[in-house]
Each structure stands twice: as structure tokens, then as C-alpha cells.
Image (cartoon, rainbow, N blue to C red; front, side, top):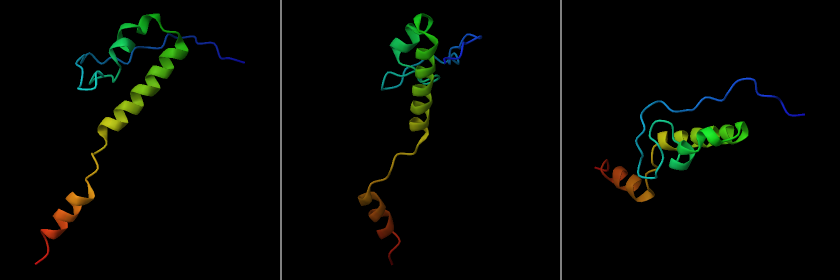
Amino acid sequence: MQQIEIFEIPSPCIDVCQSNNRGYCIGCFRSRDERFNWQKMSDSEKKHVIALCLQRKRRSEQKPATSLVEQQGQQNDFNF
């Protein structure tokens, strides 16, 4: 049985509205199509977009992994 939504799902927009180099908003992490079509989406589509936005935000907050070569170079700096 599907639960009935009583309240409208709010837009994740935080009024930053600038795109990063991948085309996602740096504020809410939605794509251009997701932003423009938000009002036309069903509640299940909106929930899916919000889940995608959370994944994108987490990925953007992760530090880039340093390569093994960089790590070895840093270790060699301390060899006396």
C-alpha cells in the first residue's frame, strides 16, 4: 500500500543558483533539467532527485584521493 503525501515536497534550492563544471548547481546539486522541471515532477520523482542531490553533495565534499606516486614522493621528503 502506498502512503499518501499530505504536504508538498519543497524544492532543495538554497538560492545560490550557480553551476559547477559538471553542470550541477553548487547550492542544491540539481542538474539544469532537474531545476527547470521541478514543478512538473511527481512526488516520487522529486524524492529521487533529492536522493541524487545528497549523493552528489557527499561526493563533492570528499577529498580527492592522492595517488600512490604522490604518497611515495611525500614519504621520500622525510628520508634523511
